[in-house]
Image (cartoon, rainbow, N blue to C red; front, side):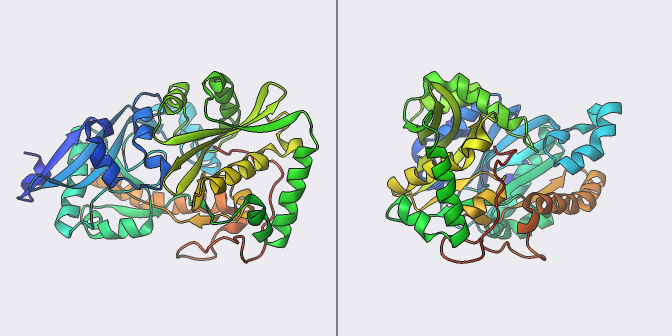
Length: 412
């Protein structure tokens, strides 16, 4: 019997090789129906790619034969710290990288969704006993796999609060994560969306659209079948990632090919061409009433002049409105242009610990302020003035306009 389950009679814990080991109908019942990043096909694509983790697993808690919780896990045997911190921290780590690079390779267990917001999948609220069992089972698994650091990544604060007693009892502490960005929809048309923006963002949007349309050599298409473009997609994506601050989850050709070949989630490529050459794209995923602009690629040779970044986002918003979506999410970077689009900042938090007391004490002292500083740096003037939840962004209905750089860099 699993050691954690032995302390909780009536429960049983299973560690499965991955999401594909679960019945499809169970996943469809438990996973968020309007979050494309939780589509089963995304996890399948991850398992068949080389995105970063050395392995995947899925923790399942049962009681009386019924599933009460499912938690995906990603195993990193040697996570490169200098690949996941911000530029300031990377500069501080540069001497360590030169003298003792092995110190920057950390065994770590990620709990939740490597590519999206974290969730514990459950048919209903977990009781305290089930929460304690789940947390202890995670730590037992980390010890068996010799993964010292354990991270519940990018969870909504309310979800972590439900697990807070169990997490705190087991030595976890909490730190801010980079917020997600979400644009709430419900407009009859794209023109209605633009008309609802505050004055300055509305003028900027119309100006950027005009500048793009003034280039007769450029056109945007929405493609269902884009397999023949995957080499160009990957090359443009790599241009963006070369400018990114963090490279935890760099997608590869195998992942993109698997997503393209699958039907879950529904996917479209917003593709911008200069003649026959792909010069920008935004990969859009759909599930239920939700959409995600999952990854972007830009040819920086003309990205600024032609306002490619903004126009592929406008095309994605138009596509989501026409699909009847209630919201579309974008990545955790380039916050100012997304706020000008009308996005809200969606607060996310981490819970983390180490399985040994001394490293845990060091992490508890150093990581929360370091991560808070990294988030504040990423948000810039949009960071909240004090502790507490993030304020809603200036959306289409109200609030002061936010300035936007002409050609954001580092977008994923």
